[in-house]
Image (cartoon, rainbow, N blue to C red; front, side, top):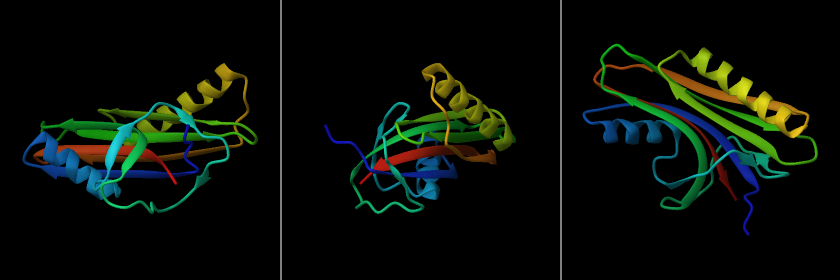
Length: 151
């Protein structure tokens, strides 16, 4: 089985006329709008290297753990966040969250979930990374936070 060797944390916001176009705008803002996302669960491959920028051709299949929310209620605050727990010598954990809340609340939630996931496995966290975003809906708004896994 193929195991990705790189990962990138991204987040974005978008507005649109429809929910799907708002989501597309958020994907573009996050830098992952031109890929075919494959939603994956919570495991960071052992030894994966964090990269600040994706280097993947357009149209590629891109595994990603992500949290997203779309709203058409003007004035509503929406947020999404991801957390990555890195272990020193094993696999890591990825947690994602999206809700009607602030960026700070979403980031706190993913930190807590990463810590709990490590505790459940009897593992120690070497490094804990987070990324989040928030948006106040103008028309139809969307947010996404993701961890893309790639080579």
